[in-house]
Every structure is written in structure tokens, then in C-alpha cells.
Amino acid sequence: MTTMTDTSNAARFREFKMPDVGEGLTEAEILKWYVQPGDTVTDGQVVCEVETAKAAVELPIPFDGVVHELRFPEGTTVDVGQVIIAVDVAPGSGDAAPAPAAEPVPVAQPEPEPEAPKGRQPVLVGYGVSESSTKRRARKGTAAAASAATTAIQSEMNGHAAVVPESRPLAKPPVRKLAKDLGIDLATVVPTGEGGIITREDVHAAATPVPAQAPAPVAAPEVLAPAPAVVTTVGARETRIPVKGVRKAIAQAMVGSAFTAPHVTEFVTVDVTRTMKLVAELKEDKDMAGVRVNPLLIIAKALLVAIKRNPEVNAAWDEANQEIVQKHYVNLGIAAATPRGLIVPNIKDAHEQTLPQLAASLGELVSTAREGKTSPAAMAGGTVTITNVGVFGVDTGTPILNPGESAILAVGAIKLQPWVHKGKVKPRQVTTLALSFDHRLVDGELGSKVLADVAAILEQPKRLITWA
Image 1 (tube, rainbow, N blue to C red):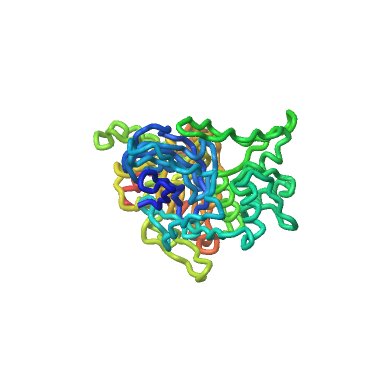
Image 2 (cartoon, one colour):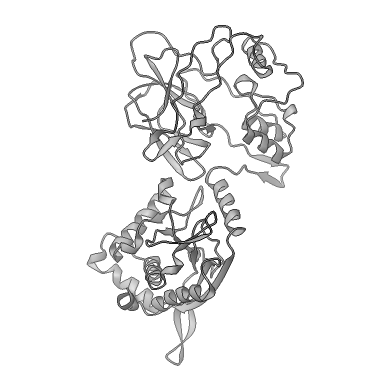
């Protein structure tokens, strides 16, 4: 179950921390609260939706009670391990209330804090909180033994301005990097974090021409207003939008892929008139009732057959061990454009699925992505990917490999074009395919065979029966 920290009223109030929902993630943005102070919650009930660098994830509360306090408003980026919600697990038992999160225990009379458990504590199925996120440094008992940073915190708790001579401003490494990227001197930033720590919002505020307003203190059971997006407008000529969450992860992954794997892209233009006729026939087939049938279904099946005929293409490059890892299964990735950016969920063991099963899997994958409910697990472990740029009216492209994969197939728009068919120029349904592959493990011959097989199947779909 999820790691929890009790307040001074431990028997009554329990706190739920931001979990690591993606194995190694350090922060997540609160997209939406589904509960408010005063609401009753039960064990397993989803209380909020957060966005990590991988996906949007719903978080369930691990105990029963009444919501006492929401610690952060919607739109706030929260570090893993920070308390996001406090719950009264024994409502009506007394008038005591937990100590506010912003007021630490006085240094002169410290109360012992529970020792953080070692290792990763499970918070959701398959996820955990990193050990470093639950450990805290012990507070010193006297001012004489305190460090300069602790002295500053003591002064702030006593209502005085903190002055730390000859020491740099307090800020976490990610915040320091953000300040460096934005060209902000941390010494000029006004801290608003607990203990005089500079937060991301403080840095963005310092970079914004219009002075940022300090957030109003939250008193339960008031509802927190969504935090405004930190968007900087420079005159009427520029708008700067911070890159975070899924878009930030996409940018990092694409840069890493483009400059790590040597990409080669090959193209082929193919007559897919017979494939389009097959799609129309399958839509009327009773065995395909209830599932969505479209050209992407046939293209996906064609790629799976091509991989079966050329299994060496379904591999990965192990840089650490200098090995080519051939996969005996196909987790077929489908690039999906969503409001939060491009994501690539994959169909597990797609090579084992029949055509109706594959159609159902594609439909579920697309609908889940559109709803923003794709889980990190659904995007992990892909082996090859299809990206359908044709839906945007684009003829073709040079797709970048999904990190850890060996090949990606781009499908262009299917258009009616003049085509030589049986010795005569006729209007035919035509498209262009582009296959990018990692030249470290896929040479030109192998890549050409795979692309040629996909094209041959789309030109003569009956090969799905003879080649499968």
C-alpha cells in the first residue's frame, strides 16, 4: 500500500503523499481534483488525476475517511513524496486538527518523526516511491548546533527575515537548473517555499515581467483554486510556454533517439485499391461486428506478417553490453496525437492476435489515448511502431524511432491518383510508406525486405492468408 505520514494527531489524521507512478519519476502535475474538503472517501477511491513525464494517471486513496485538506491546487507541479491530501479517518471523534503543513515543529522542542522505511514502498500496482523521497534529515535540538540553513529556517518560523551570510540561496537542483536555463540569478529571487526554499514558481515569477502574486494561504475546508499556467508574453510578438510533463519527455526522448541511433529511411509508393476494397468488405462481415475496421488495421496486420517473415528486424540495441537483442514477440506501438502531446502506447503480443482481436485492441488503444487515460505500462516495452501521418493529409515523412525500438513505419495519405494498372492509366487508391530503422542492427537489405513485404501485402491483401 501507499507510504503514509501521520501528523501530530496520528490516530485521527492521515496524509497521502505524491507517489512515484512511473519508476524513477521525480514530480507530477496535479491535473484535476475529484474530491474537496468535507467529502467522504473510501479505500481505493480515485481522488485526483496527475500528469507525469509519461502519462496522465489517476491516484486512489488508500484509506477511508473525510477529506480534511487539499495541500496543492490544480495545475501545481509537486515533487514525489510531498503530501498532497490530508484525510480525517476518525471524523466526529474530537475537535483536534492536524498541524498545518507550512508550520514545522519548533526546533527547540522537536518531536520525533517516524523513521522512513527502507527500499521502495508500493503505492500503486507496479509502482513505488523512491527511497530518497521519504528520508528527512533529523532536526537539531539547539540553535548553536544548527547549520546556517537551519538558522534561516528558525528565523523564518519566529517571524523574522532569514539572513544566511556567505551562502548561496536555498533551492533544489532541478530549480537551480531551471534558473540557469532562464538566465535568472537565484540571489535575486524571492523564495516562497517552506524554510526559505526557492521553488519553480518563484523562478518563473522572477522571469515574468508582470510581478507574480503570492498564493493565498489555504485554510480547510476552502476549495483550492487552480494554479494559473505560467505563460510569459513578451509584448505582442512572443508567447513562452513552459515545457513539462509528457511534452518534455517526448522532446528528451526524440533528441536522444535522433542522436543515438543512426537512422535510415526508405520509401515506397503502392497501389492500395484492393486493400480499401477489403476494408469495405470487412465492415460488412459479421465476425467484425462491434469493432472498428479501417486501413490502419490492414496495415498493422501487414507489418506483423512482414516481421514474421523477417524476424531480425524486431530487435533492440544494447549499448551497455554491445549486443543485439532479438525479440520473439511483437509489442506493436501506435503513435497517437493527444492534447498532451504525442504518445506511443503499444499492443502487447500483437503477433498472436487474430484480425478481429487486433481490431478490438486498436480501437481500445485509440479511445483510451483520446481520453487521456493511457497508463505508463501501456507505453512501455514497445518493439516496433506505426505512425499514421496520412490522417493529417500528409503524403509521407521521415519518422524518428521510438527509443529502444529498431523500426517505425510511417503511413501517408491514401489518395485517388492516376496509376498504370494492367497496362492502362486508371484512377487508383495510392499511398506512400516510409520505414525508418536503426542501421546498427538493420542493414539496407533487411529494411528493404520488410518495407517491400508490407507494400506487397497492401497491394495484394490475399497474401495475408498465404504468408501469415
